[in-house]
Length: 331
Ligand code: NAI
Image 1 (cartoon, rainbow, N blue to C red):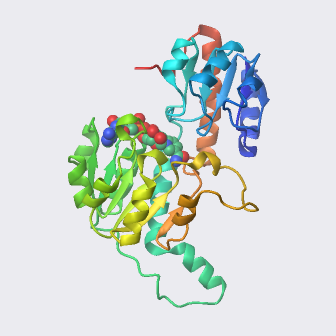
Image 2 (cartoon, protein in one colour):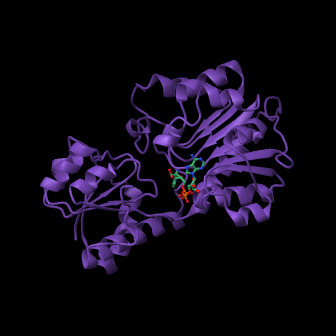
Image 3 (cartoon, rainbow, N blue to C red):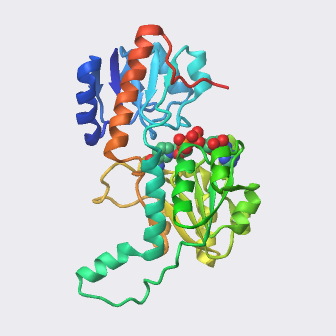
């Protein structure tokens, strides 16, 4: 198929080219995001390949359809950036990569926890400057602490098992509890109970209307004073302004983010020479107990290979049959 590949990052090209040698698609790499201003670049391409910060709203999808696009292939598990109803109305199929490496994301959530707790990022700088003082580096044992996992699908399930391995008590909230996790010792409780009892809360549910601002002023209030909040899922799960207030009051003890609700204008680019325009994000950066990474939780060699392989296989299957097992359909 002829593929317009939007939001191309240097790290993706090599791996897609390597796997495409056996798939034989014609890939046209583009650096801009897909959005209303750039949708015309896809005209004449049967397939557009997109990533999490591309915008595929009604107007963009209508433009893609007018240009002859029949397939949207997202290089992600999440598909909240795609208007599925509009895609169906315009007869465009949507395929995704349902699972590539749940370990990559779960392990990154653990990295955020360990760094925030033991402050290895600060110790690294101190030791290099000959400062071996320990003041300000005090952490806590994870063993015996209570961890709340919101969403125990592929990633949340791996994360829960890792935390069980640390000797933690693991609580979870999910609409569909996982029997095997329960057998392993995970205790399912209503969301409010999980928030109230947990020393660390980690978000692993998808972003959708029902989960938008799942963490807000009211739910933050229910969390234990001094608790740690980790989000490697999607920025829109958290009301950032409410979190800033909770950090200022000291009620929230630590915040670890790999995603941010307005990340589309920031992440995946080198903006180090520019003035930061997002005042909310700038405020977050001032807290000593906040650690932010730029949507890199998925970023392992294993995950990149699996993303490229599955995306190309999705496109090949759709080209051959007009359908694919990884199609996402509007409910
Ligand atoms: P999954 O579909 O396997 O699991 C999601 C779980 O959340 C399911 O068990 C579902 O029942 C549960 N859930 C849905 N609504 C809920 C609610 N209101 N409360 C509690 N649980 C709820 O998804 P997977 O693969 O584990 O991915 C989770 C999320 O991680 C994705 O939606 C995506 O947004 C994010 N992600 C982030 C990445 C990163 O690089 N930071 C990379 C990959 C995924």
